[in-house]
Image 1: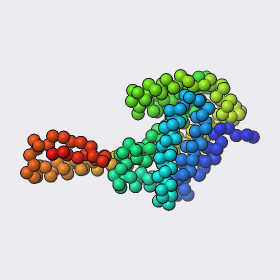
Image 2: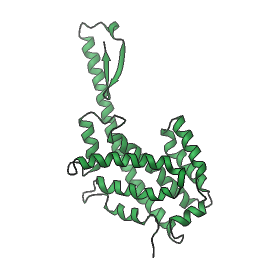
Image 3: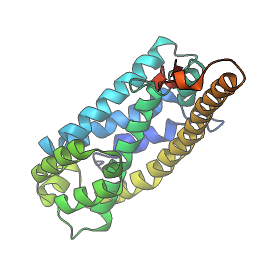
Image 4: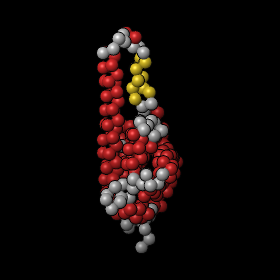
Length: 237
């Protein structure tokens, strides 16, 4: 029986982890890329999301390609940036992985809605998914742009016919969501732990600097600004 549009991704997810259970960089990114052709079926409505996903995949792939042995495991990329104090940069791979995961959260929720609420329109499924995932991370401009794009979603029946045989496409969607969602949850937990470490280190830097000021002859009145420098807090005297 011919598979649905989700068949390649379902096959790819069998290989995203090593025998030890560690997330492998290239297989994970390959699965994310396999979702892009499905988003194409939504047309212009998913242009913003697809562009964001593609950009973050490319950023992580570039890092992986720079040293495939060192960065064979996804989390090693984050650890390397933490060591070089570049993880907090908006152009970092850590930030790229964070936004890629958030975008994939939206995709999973979208297709879960389509499978569980078969009486919903495509627009209803998209709007509900967005409100549960990406909306809380978007500013006013990004949120407004997204809502405008959602008005371009195709008819639900036509979309479902395009992505696969209706007899089993819903089963494939459910399998995709139930398998991929826990994986995204693991990534979020990992990032939370490391971001806590990064901000804790930033706090320690500030505390150490203030301690130096208190025990030195520097007049606190001469401190006129506290600003961010390379991801960490720096005092300007």
